[in-house]
Length: 146
Image (cartoon, rainbow, N blue to C red; front, side, top):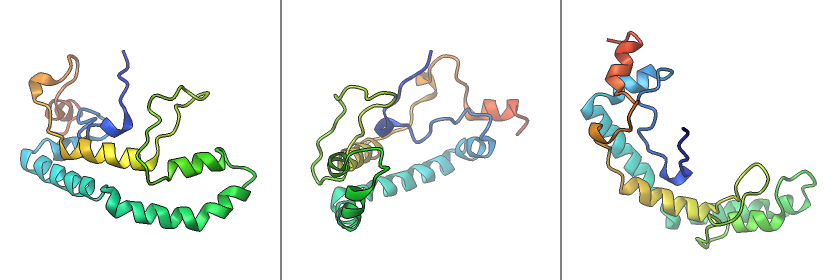
């Protein structure tokens, strides 16, 4: 069974039981370090405020607009570029799939939703973990990282 996760709702502590990331698992299994990490995540989330990044996106949109118009190898239309970089928060989340991928989410909608998710994030308790997943410390022991 695969779990679908929206990009804006990706848990910042996802993969703590991933044996391919033993250092991250070991470090974030320490409660004080995990708390500090989540403080940094909140600082980053605060910087996703559109009043901060919107003007940057607008500057870059203006700077590259003509290049996007004349690009003969672009994967999306110029209109899609304008929608993706618009100052409005319209989301295409209800849009149907376009071939092998979903319709793109505008930067503003992504920033607003991701910021909200991260600022309201609280780590799940061990009892809330789905069956079959183990804690980072258990996984670390299995990987020989005592």
